[in-house]
Length: 371
Image (tube, rainbow, N blue to C red; front, side, top):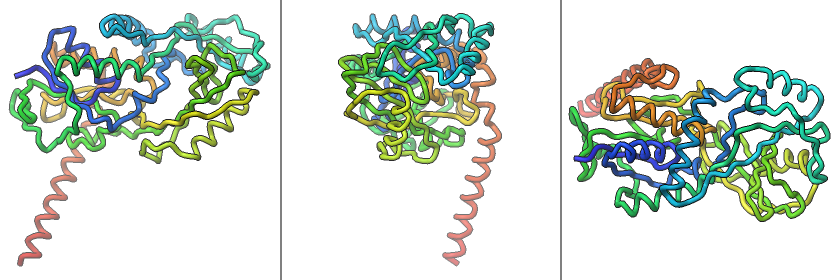
């Protein structure tokens, strides 16, 4: 018997696997490449919500855990994927400048917002009202991280690239069995794929589609992230990532013309140089109605757990909540109420009641047909 089965190898899955590795636990990961949000993510870590100049939820704690986490992981994988990158907020008028200064006086923001404004000297950027610099920011090359970690697990023979079939999971009192693998516990880290998971489909993970463009702009000459109605992330060699859109209806990973036009229109108000679109990608962010992660054990089966709902800030949140879930599963540490899936127990009871009602209806229909 091994210790864990982990389903899903995005940012959440990697963070939990690292908790297991650190503790010397034996595990196997199943990944089917169905979810793209971690792969296509911009990968920024930024402690400030720049639309409203408010602090990111638990930003201090998340950065304190995430930064050493990625440093250790870089050394372990012998791959560099954490880049310290300046984030600049473009102001559209004097009122936004004043809001920035007001926010910088608040205790949770003072160490992150630089009160010395930056005068724009780049002729390719339209920023006549200056820019504000956010401190302690950067970018994780998520695609590079995911590729390196996958290879690491493959070399250990701990990764199976295949679709996980829920109906083949057998549940005992103190273990689970899948195929020929018996494990003490199983953790689902599937992102938007949780919608197909019968154990946790009752959870309100809505999912938000995001699309990004990649452009080549030789005259842009930007080496910081520029944030306005869209963000510009420099990728090197005159290549930039532009994003992102938010679509609450479309749940496919297919790029759309509508999103491209939206990004192009917003970009036209920020830059004043020629560029070429060289790529467009899309993914479904695992977003939750109350904007908090979904962490905890199944209401009926405590050996089945979920680590999901990291939303738009998985790079920052992932290492923290993975540690909290591990401590909960192994040491019975209490999960914070705001992330614990117990907050949705009423939804679970309703889903069970509906399932029983549907079965009764189907059975009555079958009997009526046979009579």
